[in-house]
Length: 246
Image 1 (tube, rainbow, N blue to C red):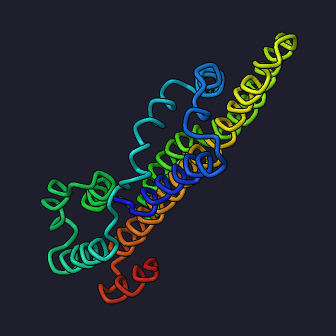
Image 2: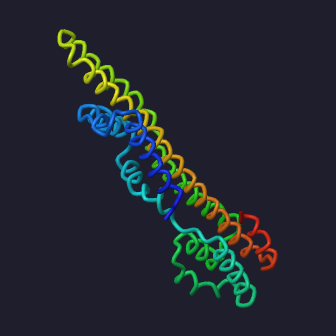
Image 3: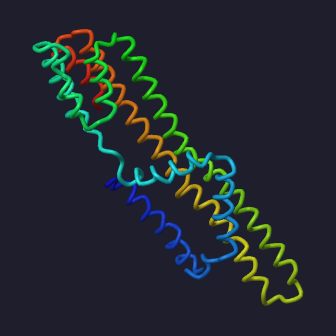
């Protein structure tokens, strides 16, 4: 569990709800069904217009990464790669065949199988980098769905506010309804700006950071496997791979 994301959500709620109460507006002032439909539904509609279904579904699938990103154990991966290099030096590349079949990480298993098959180091790098880049771009497209929603939400908030003010202007003859009507009009602006800056944009950036961490991890795996293919000393491999650790 990413404790910072959880704290961020709680502080965002405190900022909006607590601020409304502190300003004397109360909780009721923050709810307006019409504003919710205009901003939230409108933002989702805009995102759907610009996104392929496959990418949108992937964006929903990776949303849990905000709170629980895929586990990356760099230390364990380095130890595993060094162990593979030691086996390769003692038993030859064919000694890795059983490990390739048992490896739970599909990316590492693919690299190991290429090693066992006797593929040239440069070819191994090209194949694995295509896999890495394809996965990275697809994950980034999913993250950008939330970024795009963060762009659309404030504008739709303004649209909601204008529509609310239009309704107020139609009731100028009844002064008792002006105050509540104007307040309700600006709720849409709050929805738009708050959802963009406290949810959509932070979620998009958090996902992009997670994707970059996964890509760096896979780049380390590629370097390790290439080093094994080139017959480097296990100690040199370990020293090189530890450069990926922060």
